[in-house]
Length: 512
Image (cartoon, rainbow, N blue to C red):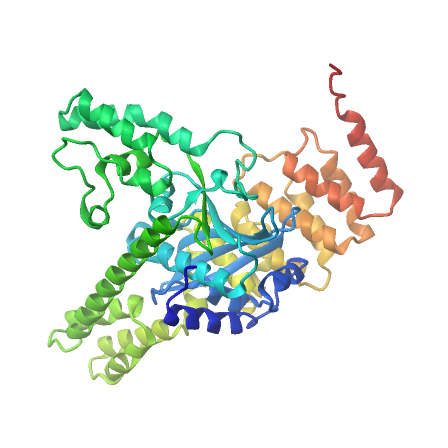
């Protein structure tokens, strides 16, 4: 059985002990998550659970909700010290087909300048450590739909083909019930890729046939990653991946646009010892390189603080403000007493950023900037709403009428905590009709409002729900299901009439 390193295990234990810190999780997800983790989770503690090792990013968990299949879904937002959301991800805690705990990962979207900060690797290891500690079933695992660059990255992390395991594909997969075999899908994509590479490498049919025979013997995604094209000048991939045995052909195959996605699983107890050992080594190497690079950057910035030129000192302080861990504060505080006002001012701002004292202020400044993308601004506002609610209470009225649904959605948790929540939420639902389908984020906004109205089940909100259900054209299936759950919760006969009308509109299936 794979056992995490003592330092990583101790760190994960400490995180689990502190997972109850902060405001309580809102709604029915709280109790389900408590059963899964064995502790009552708080937003702050849950956020720390998913914090990467890079000190320049702080993680916030938002939008924790219980899905209809009883999975607890949550969104992760990594915020840089200047208040900018620089990575997002999603996770779902659920139980697999045999009752073992399963953490299903959405693919992390990371800003280019932060992609070398080991975020994905840190979280992958953290989640594996968590499964070890919780010990919820021998088949507990991480799962993901490996798409895009994820096809390659998941192979190197030691994931196996989930559809070839006893537990089967992830229950939360977009293709959970697809009958196609993922390994066969990679084999079908191979000929076009190998012929393209062979043409560039100027090798003939013997090399092509040899590569195809290699692939037929492949049993794991790592086996596909190790594929080479015999006779090519460079058989192994460039850089550190090649040092681990990744083949040039394997890398190109897993990153090719025509290569189909595959359903991936990484178990707490290895199902393929060799593959899982290679994955652990891959994470160890990536982490070592990332930590070494960060140490070099920090030392270079510290050296700048001793320069005689103001501009150099300022650059060093500004760099430390974005990447340095708290133990650097002593070096930075010295410059807050500088006779040079410019240096002293920059040093004071650096102290606030490194300590996290200005995180809410920076988030608010970013959220209010109209030059930022609406998606990122919406995330910033949502983090403020759930973690720093008092900072934007005066902005609720403005957020409720924002033309962008992604920004407007940040007001929902604040409205839900207001003095008269249910009628206010019903008013928001009516003010954002489904007929306005061109608005990005509208479905997510309406789904959350309906979910919260379902919890209240107040008679005053019934007309708004009935109106939404009767909308023409009909709302998408996800919203119809949510509205049905909301209406069923009402004993009022009017709700039953609406549901009966909807049933009558359904066409009867043809009888064979």
